[in-house]
Length: 451
Image (cartoon, rainbow, N blue to C red; front, top):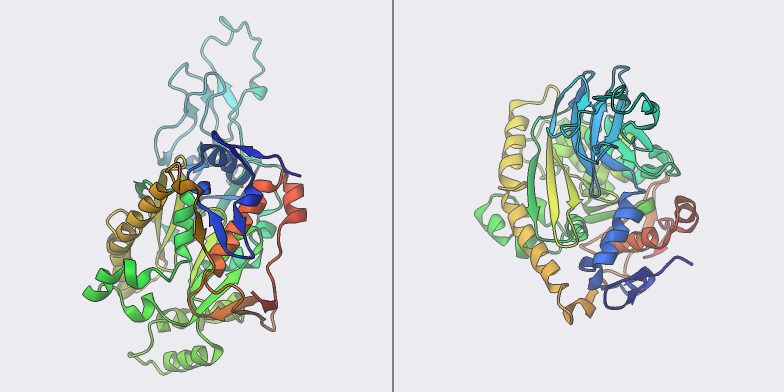
């Protein structure tokens, strides 16, 4: 049995925080300090965390700063062409050895006492090594701490601090890989310099939860719909598809039937201009091999993937990390990418989405941020934090369906299946004492039956 989490006012067991059979969630998980501390250790400290895209580090010495929970790390390409992820903390006094967000360097230098580290983290120099330390320091033992594992999937670089973590490909599973394939299958990807960053007074899980949520669109984003900034047909379609993956990965949002997909393929082949909103994506997916790569269900999904714990792979030309900054604050990082050879029309669409829809100045993100901050505030009160939340939409009302290629999903209307999967997985991560426990005890996504 896993250890009990001790809160400041009463003992909390994660097993009591969510009931998957009823969809009832205890809102205390959004405000409790001890739960947050355990999340940093049990979730972020063990999961594979997105670091950067390989295109951001084309040459030796190129680096990009990121976070694993609240641990600041440096992703850097070393002299052998490999990508290392190093803790940005000097082992002498803990000072940071890199202050820039990205750039190119020959080494990392601590501004406190001058310890110097090579691109692979090795300690290569220190003032007074002979006179002050009398040559007694074993420099091989005092380098920068590396991530336990660093791996890449289709150019997307991830790192984990836990040496017991499974390989990245196994961790992602077919659902996590599908989320990345949605983007990688478009062609040669290049991430653009400059990450849009802003902080919202909310718990990180609420920001993740929301990317699966299509119930709020007509209410929260009503102004954007009325102004015609975004189209109602694409923002709130009745046809939805939910795909569930191991360890908390999921995709939720618009999805179309095989019949409608084939109709779209026909329109695209005939060069029709007045098609459905999803024809833009279908046009890409009919390219040789792409539909086969995405799979029978994947080719018809246009929802939002989340790579657990906190990477939203948006189908617009952006990705977003939800980085925890305490239980009451989240920092959002918006990465923007372009596809080699993209048309001028697509480039203008990219610019519009990156500047006006999401990110700090994004119309939709401002709507969402207000909601998340108030939901977090509602979980702070000594009385309110003890009240439950209802995540029961669609519970027991839909069927899991499997395709001939083994992919499985739920074709339905707006629901909260993905949110329930998120919190059920969160619970499993919080209860497991090790990766061995998690691999043995985590729920496998259903492939058939009522869900």
